[in-house]
Image 1 (cartoon, rainbow, N blue to C red):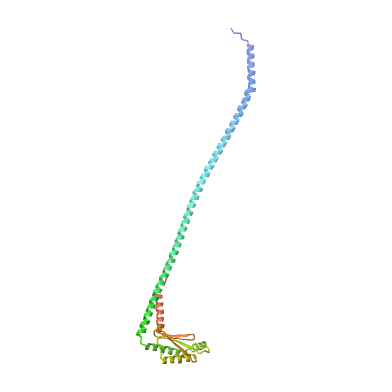
Image 2 (cartoon, rainbow, N blue to C red; image 1 turned 90 degrees about the horizontal axis):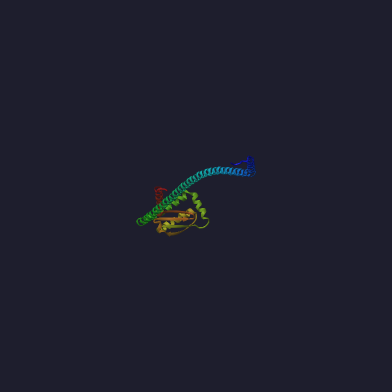
Amino acid sequence: MLDINFTTVIWQIINFLALAAALYFLLFKAVMRVVEKRTEEKNRLINELKEKNIEVDRMRAELEEQLAQADEMVNEIVENAEKQIQKNHDRMLERARQETEVILGEAYSEAQAIQQQSMEAFYERVLDTIIDIGGKVIGKAAPTELNEIFVREINDTLWDLGRGNIRQVQTLRDSLGDRKPTVYVNTAHELTPEQQRQLVRTFSALANRNVTVEIEIDPSLVMGTRIRIGDMIVENSVAARLNDLRDEVREHLSEWMPNE
């Protein structure tokens, strides 16, 4: 049977408790402080990580919002660009249409002007041909006595001028000055001596002095004469009457022809 020494047991218990207390204060407490510090650091890191996660979530939300706004801005920019492009396109089309209308209008006006000029030139050639043919026909068909009638008519006209228009006669005399005037006579046919003397008498009376006469045959007059003294020109001929007829016909044609 074991012999238990309680004193020794108690003493051993006391030693164990003392050793446990020493271990607690010297080792376990220090270890616990380290563990607590590590736990605090861990908790701090966890909190910081949570805060960072919150910040990351906030930044992600802001980024997503900015991306959404960017998408809206891009869509708005694209829409405005498309509207501007369409507007520019419409403006260019309208400008091109207006320029085309101007070009077509100018081309139409030019075509009308060319057509008008061509018609006028054609009618002018027709008139020239008719007048030329008419003059030739009259020149061949009319009797020579017709030329005498034209000469007599112009002589009578000059006598009437001397009696009825004193102011014009005086103007003619003043324009001649003191020199001996020359009467230039263009005639379709030769003048008889009597016709020449009549003209000399008539113009001497008009000029109030003696005159000299220079006569030139001009077949283009067809019948009649053209006379010039000083600044005065008088004509009584078929060519002049045909030219007057040409002017009347041209005036009627200009009224008949369509304007631009």
